[in-house]
Image 1 (cartoon, helix red, strand yellow):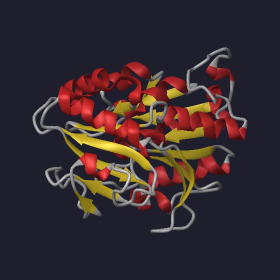
Image 2 (cartoon, helix red, strand yellow):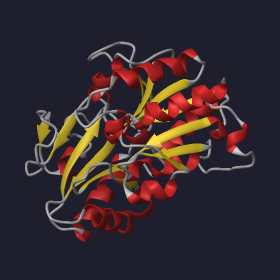
Image 3 (cartoon, one colour):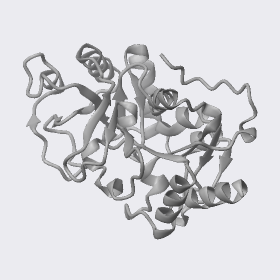
Length: 289
């Protein structure tokens, strides 16, 4: 398996970029969830210059319509914090799963049990390839109707609705805990049974397979293309981006980024509402001459 641990044998600046990996919410997208004309132009210019662009997001595949019109070339995106690689060429409602890195139901059940013990009051939802299921108390954050309502243990049972589908991640929400404190509690409680991160400003955690992250799936996609980490430029703003930003040869924290992201990135750019990704891409292309 390709390692997502950064191995900086070669100075990153000595190699021109071959791939741009960018988060979406809080990074490429403005706060109104739009892609600015400047950013659209920058992405197109990068692809025209032979640099692949990968959208790398915590979003599920069904929420990728916001950028489906802006894919070029390969048309692939990494969704669910690395749990799936999706072909966006099919357009709205027709995304195809190219690679799935599922969370085993046994691990998911262990994570639910351990976190229930460590943080009483936690509520859960289950994200699968083609379905979304939640506990009755889980808040309606995403303006979508769940396919089924039941306790998480029932949703993850062998005979549960959607039992034939891979589980991509578990969502865990706590109504009162501080988001960073909740993340720390969950990581300590769950240990190596799953990978725990967050991308929301609320106390909402995202729980994936033990070795699944944006970084590890991006590393796999790059290895398939013969692209080294030194040739990758990455952008992000929240804790679920930290591993990717650490792995990439060059990485940029947005002006609106979480402190952990600022510490992990090798550089900074302006905020998402100021087209921070486009600012860097334009500079990279100008440096190529």
